[in-house]
Length: 118
Image (cartoon, rainbow, N blue to C red; front, side, top):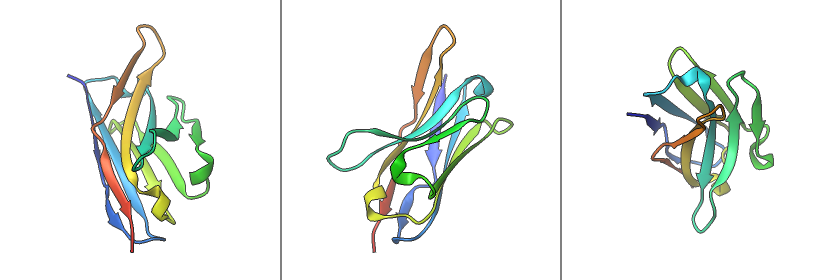
């Protein structure tokens, strides 16, 4: 059974930091590209950042210079370090893993709430 379990969300003041973790099980983690998405109140889900199997990273313009994605294949975990948080970063953050090699598959975590407020 495949599971992606996010953790690390919470309430933080503007300018603060959080580190999200997504622990994967039931997959060969090193075969998967991984990403973080978020869905704010009344908004559509959007890509925040992604990291390929080879370690190449990609960021949404709104988080460049503030967020850093990384992965530890030995721990089957992907991280999102979030610094200089803003109220507009408030959202449910979801972990996504996908394999483009056939058969292609996509897995989602259940999400973790991040609230940035004073």
